[in-house]
Image 1 (cartoon, one colour):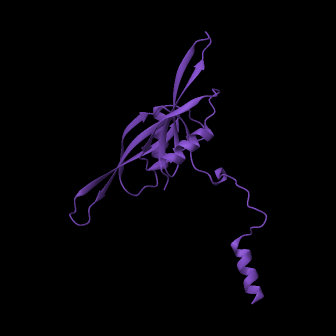
Image 2: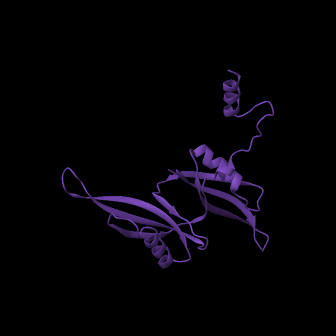
Image 3: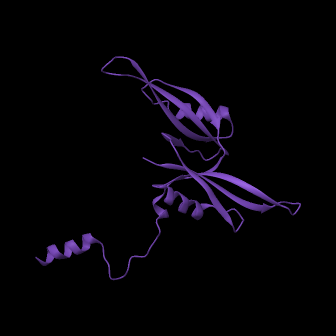
Amino acid sequence: MASWYLGKIRYQKEDEAGSLKTINEVYLVDAVSYTESEARLYQQIVTGASDFSVTSITRMRLADLFSYEDGEKWFKAKVIYFSVDEKSGKEKKVVNYMLVNADGIDQALQRITESLRTMLIPYETTDMNLTPILDVFPYTAEEETGEEIPANMRPLSEVMAEREAAQ
């Protein structure tokens, strides 16, 4: 399960008039810890400004993230699932937050409904809010540090196969 962190960065940019303007931007990063999320922000963000700083990192509780090719804005949906407690027989509400990108609030609601159409449990989308998130950086395996494996090292499977063949 992904751990999402909301990172806020601040930098100064020169506007058309030549004066410096402070810019604040918000990004969502999939990371294992606060430290990794900060490192990934420094890796991913290209602001055009040589000097920017990460001003805050907070954990964002998300049950799911639905990403589409189009859609400039990110919306946070509050979805409530209804289930029955087996012991008491009472109806129980489970609140989940989901993020979806869309061009508008109507499209965001359609995309949440489309993504959850196979759900067997009854649910209700109660809130849909526009977030200040500019971009989302999910974790991908290619992002590994890419450290080269030294020439004198080999995969363990090869070494074990050689040992078995020698016996």
